[in-house]
Structures are given as C-alpha cells and as structure tokens.
Length: 105
Length: 206
Image (tube, rainbow over all chains, first blue to last red; front, side, top):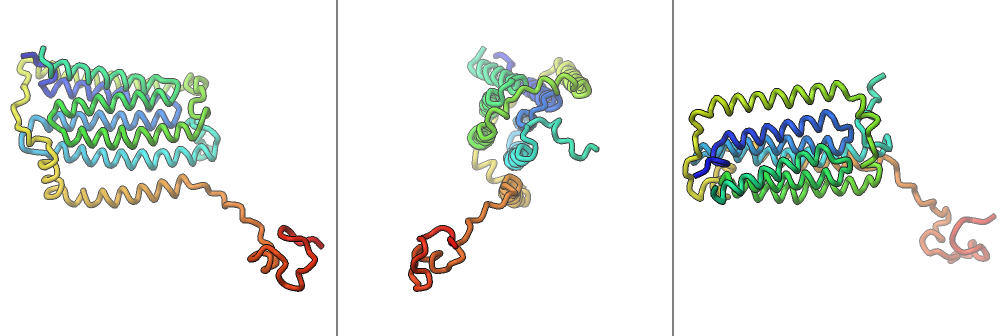
C-alpha cells in the first residue's frame, strides 16, 4: 500500500509550502485585498498542520478544537479587515497599501 | 496506488494551484477564486485526515462566508480594486528579499524534517469513525474548551460591531430641509386661514 498521504510529513510539507506562498504574497503584493487573501491562506495552512498532527493522536481532539477557534478568528479578521479596506478606499480612493502613508511624515 | 492516495494528490495539487493563483493573479476576482480552490482542497484533506466536522465547517465558513465577503467587497470597489500596481511593485525590493528568505527558510526546515524522518516514516494508525466526528469535537468543545468557546461569542459580536462601525460612512446624511410652516409640514396644504392664497408645498414664497 502506498504511503502517499498517509504520513504526517506530507501534510506538513504541503502546509509549509502554502504558508510560504501566503507569506510571499503578503510581502510582495501591494493590493490590500490580495494581502488579506494571503493572510487567509496562511491561516488555512496552519489549520492543515494542526489537523494533520491531531490525526496521530487517537481519541484526542485538541488539534481540531484549536483549528475550530482559528477558523472563528479568521472569519472575524476577514470581516474587520474588509471593513478597514472599505474605509481606506473611502479615504484614499485606492486599495494599495503604499497609499497608507499618513503616519510617515 | 489506492483511492486515498489519488484523493490526497488531487486535493493537494488543487490547494497548491489555488494558492499560486491567489498570489499571482492580477485580477482580485481571480485571486478570490484561487482562494476558493485552496479552501476546497484543504477541506478535502481534512476529510482524508478523519476531520469530517472541520471539513464541513471549513466549507461553510470559508467558502460560504469569507470568500463571498471578499467577492462582495471587490465588486463594491469596482474596477479600482484591480487597478494595475506594477509601478509600486517594481520597487518592493526589501519585500521580495524577505519573501525569498521566508520561502528558503521554510523549504529548508521542511526538507530537514522530511530527511530526518525518512528512515522510519510513521504511518497513521487506525482510528474509528468517532475521530473528528461532531460528537467527539463537540464533547471536547463543551468540556475542556468551554471558556474559549464562550469567549469566541464575545469576539464575534465585537467583530460585527467593529466592522459596522469602521465601514459606516462618516458623512452625515443630508437632512431634508424642513418647511418652517407646521401646517404645511404635516398636512401639505393651506389648512389655516393665514396660509390661504399661498402656493402649496415647497418653500415659502414672499
């Protein structure tokens, strides 16, 4: 029987790649909407790692419960973040994070 | 090659393609669709990991609420949401360097993890259907994790109120100019003798 997808290392590797992609997108892109989406991507990667490690512990649901809370926090973060994006767009008529420079001078 | 292997491969490839689409897409709508593909792929991986409850929650909360919220805001902002940002991205050298360091560090760390465990990769043991079911997760949620669970309600209500307070327009809605004549204001016509002969409604004409 093939081992692909049946050991925790494969999931952790995939989770690390997804997290790195999200981090790269957050750092390189300048569109605030895309940056928020990349934050969601990173949270999803963390969820995947938590659930994968939880699979090793039969009868213990701590990882999945933690992942549940992360999903709740991510939903709240998306709502507040998008509200801030709307407010920012109303202020600057732009969605680029470079425009947010009022504290700079 | 069993069905489980194929399922893992398909879900992980979908998640990777969606993530790359999110990062690379010029159009934010396409980015949101990439995020959706990633979320569905990860929900499939949750199923493979015997986390049925979390897979359902993932689909409901992320695919059903968060992505829809993103698409809603992108549509609300219109073409400005996808305006070309090449000009500012060209000078993001520090960000690119940081991103490269992040990618390299994570890759090396996971490769080390894989190589160290390559001699004896430990397969997942057998678990019954109760692992990851609604009953098991809920039982833990309402016993050991009851305090954070209740605090989550406070978090969500604060987030809702905060989102409304932040997104609401600061401008006062322009007040309808009130007719100073109370009779006209309430009845719209010259009911009192002192108003007879004047034009109906609107402003007082001298």
